[in-house]
Length: 93
Image (cartoon, rainbow, N blue to C red; front, side, top):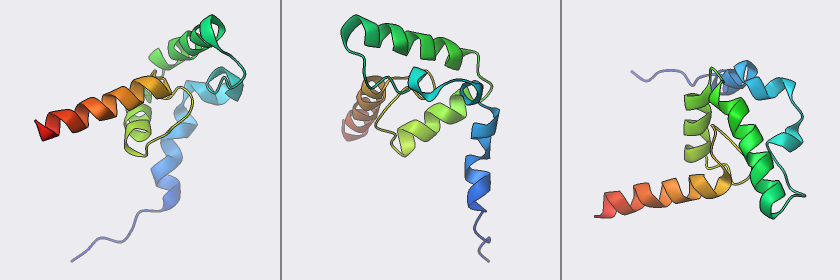
């Protein structure tokens, strides 16, 4: 017997507990920054993430979806891309 599908809302409700909810999106999606300014903005976002109650859930979401932009679960888009490649490489080895 199959289970009924979960409501879409329940898939995303963890985001309501995120520390990022009370902060401007540009902290986590710094599209107009480059070089040192970008790294500083990413580190600021990561500090917020590190104290977040949904850090692990957020990171898993971003790695599985995959989210291509911004800081999610204290990981930048570059870090998530590397983590996904490493996971794929380890499966193929």
